[in-house]
Amino acid sequence: MREVDVVLVALSSPIKIGIYEDAKLIETIESKQMSSEVLPKIYQDIFKRFQINKLFYANGPGSFMAIKVAYIFLKSLSILKNIPLFATDAFYFNKNAPIKAIGKLFFVRVSSQITTRKLETAPAMEFWLPDVLDYKEFSTTATPLYGIGAVG
Image (cartoon, rainbow, N blue to C red; front, top):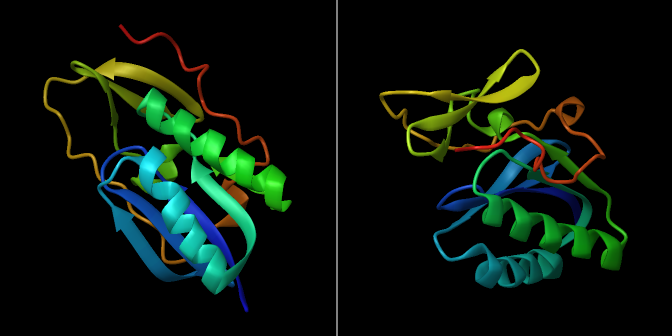
């Protein structure tokens, strides 16, 4: 069975899952269904076809509920199947573009700090899976980025 790493970006619709072999993207899965309903089905299929070595995900900022669902799902898999879980912020998956917070507020990354800024024009919010995974961008501190300042 082929050994792979699996990346989940579940911050907006569609959710995106990348399957990586030797750090190179070999397959992309997208779904517009709710994460809580579709993730078990998708990962069940992945486990049938591959040996998963590592799990990765975007831990925020973004939809609080989407991040929470992704984290709980992946953390459970990590514990049950003894697979290491890694995370990085969502800016890795959108070329550092602003990410919708609420109203006209957007999350932005300035240097290494994530904060909110009011933007009059909403930029397109699209996430992508890199062709080659840069492992240095990920951390074993995989908890969600709940500690980003208050939005309001």
